[in-house]
Amino acid sequence: MRGNQLKKLTPTGDSAAVFNDVKRFGQASLIDASNPMKVLLYYRDFTSIVMLDRFLNVRNSIDFRKQNIFQVKAIGQSYDNKIWLYDEVNNRLKKMDEDGRLLLETPDFRQLFEKAPSPQMIFDQDQFVYLYDSMQAVFVFDYFGTLKNKIEITGWHNLKVVGNFIFGTRGDSLYRYSPRSFRTESWLMPAALRNSRAIHFSATRVYALKEDGIEIYALR
Image (cartoon, rainbow, N blue to C red):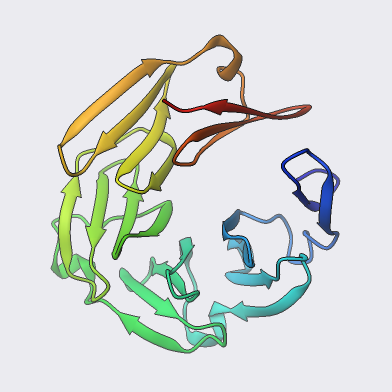
């Protein structure tokens, strides 16, 4: 995102779509493009989401403040194209539809944990919802808000839940954790990756955002 534009690129690097109004609510805090048919722009300062279609045209927006939600750090798309969010004031994981209607909310996490999580990221993967609090752990819930697992991962950057693995970086290392085998693997990061602005993982690729473009590496 440069020049206050959000661009969608083809695999060859050509521009496929452009959204020019990224700063309509200030600086966008988060972009969720996990569903290429619906891209979410989250503006934390205004507690608002703007939804874009696959051509990066605005399809809808939600002001969480109208739902009496005033502090949200993390949001994420659900498997059924709804929106997960964590209400920091009420300490509840909530699910909304595109019109801002509340579909589900958990009990107050302060009643469930000695210290309630403060997640920076939310992922919906294979019938589970992952909340990552870099100071505590990865909290794993089912779709009814029941805690299923607590994975002691802290201090990871660029965390991503993909398939059966959790990927991330820390220092000069790449990490991959398997919730099934409880095994953590790590690799020394290639020199070309160390000065990346951000790193993104898919099941087979590592995408490194650089100042002048994106570099793609095979993941083995």
